[in-house]
Length: 341
Ligand code: SD4
Image (tube, rainbow, N blue to C red):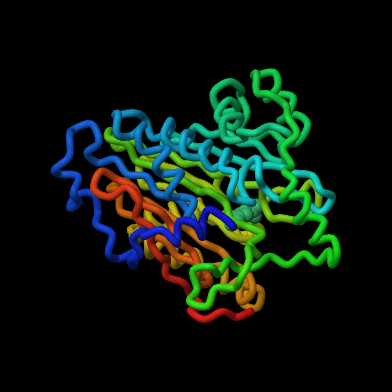
């Protein structure tokens, strides 16, 4: 059972994106100075837990960058989700490979892709950002760098993930599922084979940062890299405008430089909600047939702290945490309101 369903079973708030107040009008006004204006948002229901790991950093007046790293590390260590970090499902060959990126609003960024046997790719990504002249390290080179930086090398594939892989090998059919546990008639069992943690934060000084971490699409070809570690695809942050992140089938985000697109649409005056919707429409226009059977989700925040989200299909939820409400879980709007599969 994923942490996603666990959270859905607890009494988290479900509401439409439109119900979320901007920071200017929120309960922040009644909170102590250090946290006024701070907010953190994350994809999926495990985002509630990730936000709660990030929040103490923001509440103490810490940076958005430190907050998103803390939140992403929580998800990477979570023993209940099969799509991020140490408990992720492996690729076609039974190898667990992790992707992650981190970015702040001044354009500093770092990422790792196809990283094996290192439990916290988000922290390695931050080291790439802070201690190298590069942005992205991949595969064996990323692992070598991580070890040099003191990250322990350890086998990560869990018995549960190995069992899921053995089950999958009976058919060896690569078919990403649209995550639908949020739907009224949820399918029994956990059929998800994708869900990335994308996290965006604004701190009390008004600076933005984001993090994105995933084991990628389960059963992918060995060597496949998705959108999550690609700056501009799975994550983009600009203090002048806002930030965006993505989840779903990463090939669609890569085709559209999608997170960059969402931020640029906000720069042109769209609200976070409108920008996410326009980016989803772009995916549909480019691949109308394919878009009926795969999931793509965007989450955005602007520099005023306003939040928006949109997905291709029903089922995408996102978590919002600020001084007024720590565990809000909201339903995203979607283009398709009935399941097409
Ligand atoms: C990828 N975008 O590797 C990731 C997977 C995912 O929700 O998000 N899932 O393509």
